Image (tube, rainbow, N blue to C red):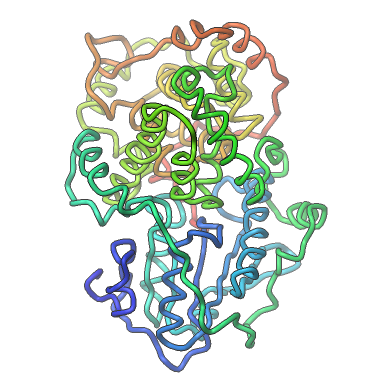
Amino acid sequence: MDHDLPPTLANWREAPRVRALNAARPVRASRYVLCWLQQALRAVDNPVIDAAIRLGNAHGLPVLVYHGVREDYPFASDRLHRFVLGASRDLGRECRARGLSCVQFVDRAAKRERGLVYRLAEHAAAVVLEDQPAFVAQWQAERFAARAQGAVFAVNAACVVPPAAIEQGVGTTSAFRRRHERVRETWYGWVDEVSDAGPYAGPLPYEPDLLADLDDPALDALVATCAIDHALPPSALFPATRAEVAARLVRLRDEVLPAYAGARNNASRPEGASTLSPYLHFGVVGPREIVAAAQAADVEPDARGKFLDELGTWREWFHYKARTMPVPESFARVPAWARRELAEHAGDARPELETLAALVAGETADETWNACQKQYLLDGWMHNNLRMYWAKRVIAMTPSPETGWATACYLNDRLSLDGRDPSTYGNLAWAFGDAAPGYGRRPIYGLVSTRTDASIRKQVGGPAWIARAAGRETLRLAVPAEPPVDPYLSGVAPI
């Protein structure tokens, strides 16, 4: 329904980011334009907010930014809740600085609100939300738009180049790269829209939570009241603040990019990774901000180019592909040839089978795999070079290809701050065969390529790092009695 955009959005430079989710038109006799955020938790360089402002200005209405968090989303835990609410707090503070009203709702026993976003929408000229092609955000947006009485617009805030700006049907990474490189620089800059109407100060259908007013102890206390998994603690390595994002962008410019060529594949060298993926996943930082930091670095063009290729080509390729998939987190996304190869070898002897409890705790017979898994379990993040080995090995450590996929998704989604994302699902699909076939059939894998830990161990300091990382004290978490199943088939309810 992209052709149904109102002129104020259809004529906007960023119009390819926007699509209409229903056929309704904006309502003029309204109080505000509702901007409903789920993951784009930032007030700077946020195309969702900017699209809402453009609509609001066209109708002479203020924008109301809303973010809500329920207790019953899949894998809800202190780790995820605390990160999300910390990001939402800074979202509220930066909205104030922009002259926008931002309200939140945190679901808990002391405060329940049924159908809140629908009640907020009753007073909105239109609802502007995120175009997220994975996990619960996608289901929520589609379900809401189908039931909403007013106009609903989805805006891509996750990519430098919105997927709709690239011709559809591109089938390979190299073809996507060529098309992306051709246009990406025209999308690097941005100017935040300015709200003419000022903040909304009228009535609301509930008593909002104003996270911007809370300090850290109050935010921790709020998380403690929620019926979620309290055994999985927040990650001390990833404070959910815009100040932390700013510090990491400086680190990217001054430390990571100058060493990137030699350090990017070495998990023992902290300067080899930007560690920005959790902030990208939850939209605390936008990709254009990261591009700006990379362009400001005093480094050789090749170093900058490699980093921007990882950010622009690979990450946005996975977002591009996910947009056409009903469920990007399903095993069905793995190419048919790879699923066939894995199925033909499903009955092969699997001498390295591990229990789910051992996998979660990082207490398997594979020291290198344990070192990788401890990053997910204890830090909520894993070095990219380790993820490739980690995911390949899960195939051999689980009873079947389907169980292997579901187990990898379970570990990724429950433990990692950047799980539940088109990029991480794309990485898992690569491990299960979304790439060229390997050379020669192997037990369990067939023609799906395998991976050893040689590239990890041969790095300077590699063996010592593996021993230290694998030896870290583990966490004891409750795990299901039965192996995980494909998220597409599990029937878990969205947020």
